[in-house]
Amino acid sequence: MTFSQKNNSEKFGFIGYLIIAIFILLALRLWQLQILQGKEYRRLSEANRLRIVNTPAPRGIIFDRNGIPLVENSPYFFASVIPDEFDETKIHLFSKVLNIPEEEIIEKVKKSSNSPFIPVKLKAGINFNEIAFLEARKSDLPGLIIEVEISRNYLYKDSVSHIIGYLGRLTPTQIKDPAYKDIPADIFIGQWGVEKLFDKKLRGSPGKRIIEVNALGKEIRLLQEISPVKGEDITLSIDINFQKASEKAFGEKVGALVALKPDTGEILSLVSNPRFDPNLFTKGMTSEQWLAISNDKRNPLLNRTIQSQYPPGSIFKIVTAVAGLQERLISPDLKIDCRGEIKYGSQKFGCWKSGGHGIVSLHRAIVESCDIYFYEVGRRLGIDRLANYARSFGLGEKTGVAIAREKSGVIPDTQWKINNKKQQWYLGDTFNAAIGQGYVALTPLQAAMMISTFANGGTLYKPTLIRDDQPVASGKVNMDKETFNIVKNGLVGVVNEPGGTGISARSYYKIAGKTGTAQVIANRSRLKYLPEKYQDHAWFVAFAPAEKPEIALSVIVEHGGHGGGTAAPIARTAIEEYMKIIHPPAVIQHNEDKENNEDIQTTP
Image (cartoon, rainbow, N blue to C red; front, side, top):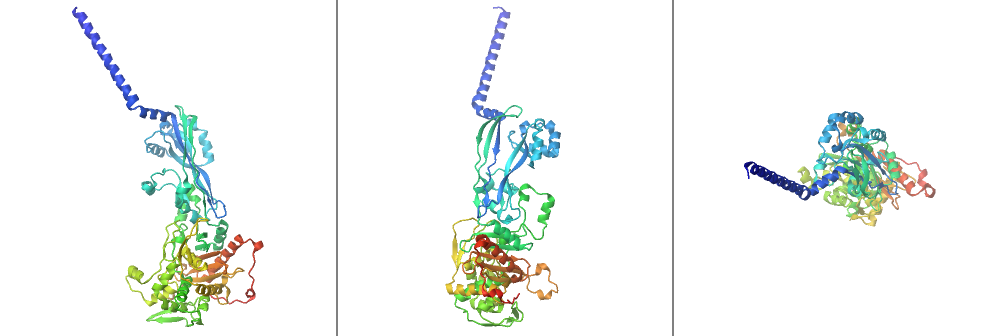
């Protein structure tokens, strides 16, 4: 073999080995792509031709006790873009059509998730006109899609707003909270009231639509659809017609009204005035609207029924009377001479009637709300015994109606003052507590529970917002039939007898009730002019009909003055409207007794 032939032979051998090596490398690469990474590349390939669209679940409907819907579901539309299909050269057109700054669009697309196929929301809350406009220009806007989420329309606007609450997006704090880890950040969830309390039940489960698209992102066909599961409906104990009537009776006054069914604890009406429109929170509000709400000194976002606590004033005398009678420390025949004030050391404790009531028994003391009489009852009881009776009425602790952050109220005793004030308890403190002043504080819901518990004979029911929930009896007041009848007759007299402080609540239904005037400041005599913020709160608690109660309620008007003049008429109107609802006028038996024609003398 010549040198040339040998050289050619070696050259061909090298080329052969090189070709073999290349084939081996290609084979190894194919093995890597198809075997080791086959599933991943198949997934990416599928994702490149598939579009997964989430289908929102219809939220459960909230009904009133008679099956009237209080809310309805409504679509909430978004203009979104799929990052993989987004053409940045068209950014100017996107900005012009959506009326969004270019920088904002680029920032949102860049901050999107790692998947280039998951839509990024660019603009929320677009209306039907905007949708039509965008659909007509989709061919010029690659990657643009219209998404839909389920929102709410609150049919009665500000009515029942403090009960139902509203929907909203996850807040930054909630996004970091492990309790919300399974909830997509871009869906509506309950943020307040019943919407929040029963959010998981109402929310349901979203579905999915898997769609095949071509290289241009155009939909070709639907490959698979998983239907969403509607959330569960909820029936509240609220009667919307009665709720509206109660709100109307309240007018523009600031305060609260709570009405219960005495035999079940169901909440029939829950009014906190002023109110707000929850649709603003769900659909989005302007900065001017938000400033109007947040700067309103009357605080419409405060649920006064459970988040405000007030001195109960004379409505607390119901507890004092029951405790004194039941402990046999007083009798109906006990008479006290009220001369307008009593002295204790250097202090003076007055009666609301400066000249005094004269000699009064328990019945007249309740009817005319004599403070001097109840100072004596409190002295005989002592604060610890009085506090125990108050707690048996459900006072001094949260009721469990968790539609907002509930206050517990205050029922003080000797240990409470040591723990909270670092002081011992004095008899003067007992005098104040016996008439619902001093450290004692109730929420309007607790006041309604108190009168409801008395009205049914002493069974404390846990209040509920759900219709036909099994009544939960959480306690029993130590009150025999004799005590009940004595106090009840006094409460009937408050509204129906001459001199009764609640005479303005008198109705063709026999209403039993108790007025209360809660002082905001103690030393008012030093002020020549009393600004509204220092004026007394006006209370009235009642139940009707007196012989067989079907409703019990509490009313408080902030800085409303005397309970008999301000709160009692609201209660009367609300009770009459409720009785008309449950007993239509055609079958009403009016209670027109002979007293209707008497000349009734009224007092503050």
